[in-house]
Amino acid sequence: MNAPLFTDEMKLADIIHLNYRLLLLFPRLGMNLGFGDKTVKEWCESSAVSHQLFLMICNVYNCEQYLPGEQEIEEIDVNQLIDYLQRSHVYYLQNRLPAIEQRLQDIGETCPEGHRQILKRFFEGYKNEVISHFDYEEKTVFPYIMTVTKGCPSGNYKIEVFKENHSNIDDKLNDLKNIVMKYLQGSARGEEKINVLFDIFSLEEDLSKHALIEDKILIPFVLKLEKSYDKK
Amino acid sequence: MRLKIVIVEPSIIISTGLKRLIEMKKDFEVIALIADYYHYLEKIHYLDPDIIIMNPAVVEMKKRQHLEELFSELKNTAFVALIYQYIEPEVVKQYHAMIDISDDGERITRKLSQAINALNTPVDLAEKNELSEREKEVLVALAKGKINKEIAEMYHISIHTVITHRKNIIRKTGIKSISGLTVYAILNNLISINDVE
Image (cartoon, rainbow over all chains, first blue to last red; front, side):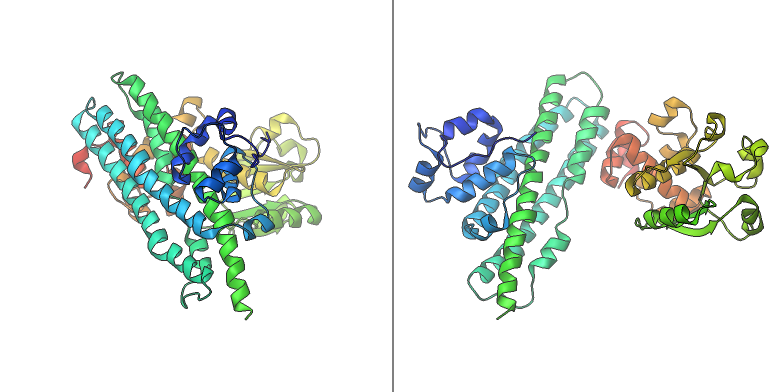
């Protein structure tokens, strides 16, 4: 089903009313509640945030089929995009993952010791995978992109490498879903299990959109920029 | 390891088209195109297919319902019917899967995978969803850190069979990673935490 796209004349409040899940994006976009009746344009101007970028991200999260066109991609403020992606990393690692980890710990306490241990170990394994994944992006990919945008792409790396190796980190998260849903027995903490499962589904969705933004917006942007330098 | 396929079909148009569609997936390799059953009989000694895709009509009417007899020495081969004309339901029922002339590449390769699965797991409905004994054994071995080759040797089966079991395990449980399978194994009391490093 095609959701209508958001525009810069819309009120921020209306956007949330249309899809409350977008609330989770706001901290990463540098936004707090209490914005009154401001429109997207007004708020973005007053906060020095590119309204095109703001809308692009909200639209990607809100609308299944939406992807920006070539023209739109060319015009993005890539510094702000990378900023947003980095803040998202922080959000996942300091907010979402710890919340799930804590819930799983609480649930684990009602399980036999072996079960508790393996669950803990599994989640730690997942968390480390995520940390490595983000680390690589922050230490290698993003700095490289900054050199490209400044006009002096550093010699050895190419965004193609990132493109080929952009592994998905959702296998374990997907497994965790099935584990919590189907195989975690016992009636203890039943509602907590449901809550954590909901969180996991929500995180999975968020991460897949995050990856989509990297794959379908950031990488094409950099590829095009690299090409323009190669021609010179 | 690619699955080997033999196509037994008189029409070259259909068999070459089918071969092309199948070989778009790297998991499969069509090792022979044979026009009729009797030519197949001549060649079976050196062909060792995992799957035979066959137009049931190549076999004379009175023998069609006796697929088992016709291919009695091929216990580890899946049979897939290629249908584009009327074939009696009792004949089609004998096959592990059925390809229709209107199927596209994706569907065809999916059905081929299903045929292999049908070959390896008993048709009992409960067993379609629950892990079989052998699948549990493979799962436990994986949780203990064994690789495909080691598991094949432990149980005297081929690596191909191990891979099939792994695919079934993924399909039934929805769990893909080894660490996820380890959690499954412990939660379902197939092993204890002490068995895992």
